[in-house]
Length: 136
Image (cartoon, rainbow, N blue to C red; front, side):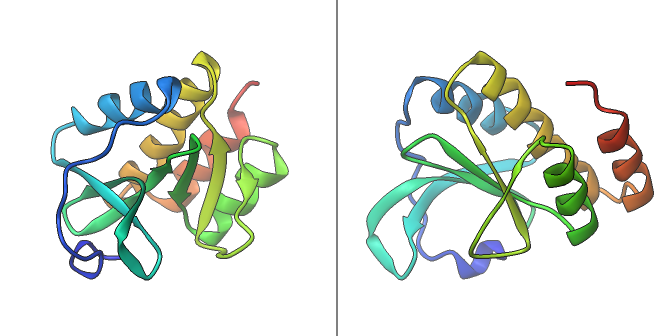
């Protein structure tokens, strides 16, 4: 979803410990805008933190510590096949990951970095190569 489609601005909320660490890390990156992620269809209910690079969504972190990161279909499929992220049941444009420990913070940061690099013009072939070479 584009930034201008997300509704009114509010600063990102406080998240659970590990998700908060990732949120702070993402918000410090150059060009990233962090803001409240609203419950779908209800701008009175906070549901997490959104992260944008320009007008493009990187993804968001929910109050329960789950990350939803935008990806192309091919990258999404490769991440799921390698067990590096989970399929998001409501949209083929996102992967999910639990941010519930230090390893989750690192994995989440990597997933968000894949999206950032895609927005910045890194080829899908290069991103797929990185996913396929990732050592768990």
